[in-house]
Length: 117
Image 1 (cartoon, one colour):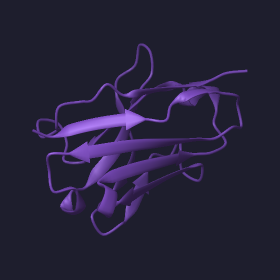
Image 2 (tube, rainbow, N blue to C red):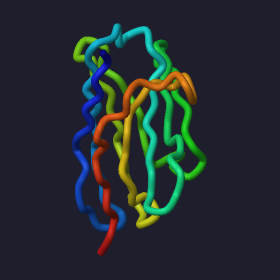
Image 3 (cartoon, one colour):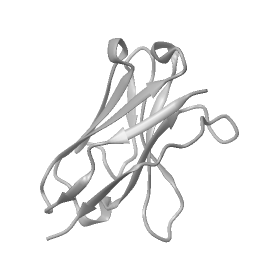
Image 4 (cartoon, rainbow, N blue to C red):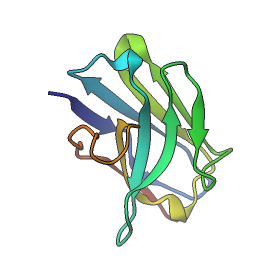
């Protein structure tokens, strides 16, 4: 069974930075397309960024130029470097595969990111 453990969230002022981590176990990580998602209060979960096994990345327009997704296949870990954070980035952040609805792994607990002065 695949396990996803997100960490690194917290409270940060607007303009600040955070680095999220996603530890993945129970699957052959290095050949999986992976993604970060987020869910703000009262809103649906949305896709933030994806990374292919090749390292090719893609970002939602709302975070392009501010967030960077990366992966370390040797550590079975994925990261999300978030810079120039805005209050609208406040959400619970989750990692999962990038295969789409019906094919996700069981969701982890997520990590809360709060951007506020």
